[in-house]
Image (cartoon, rainbow, N blue to C red):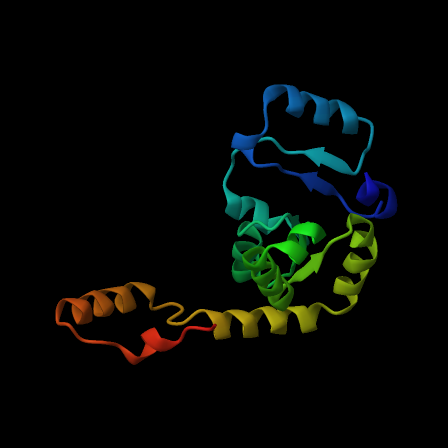
Length: 169
């Protein structure tokens, strides 16, 4: 509702995990937003690629889908995270720190409208940041299959590849 009232110039598509939404919750969502013209509730289990094509801003929880979106589109994801978990769970906080490096991570949903406006006026900056992030974090992009075959061959021959040591602490 925060987005629908503060960003009326955007169409907001709410697409929950299809296998996580019961029929009763889906009906409640549809009823809740039926008179808000810029909100669509998408309960299909359609192709994610189709969703990416029509999405300007991907807003999610700490889902890895946000990274898939950024890698595919070079557009930022806005991750909404639980501040208490961030402060108290080291693995969660490390994951959110990665979200912050590539996209944007917010602990307050009220910050969304302003964040979207910032992204709009800095699109080139975010695209470069996403490209740099994936170039640093992923190796052998475009050559993944060959890399895996070469790695299996090295393992079978009790050999070690120097790239295997590229691990961040």
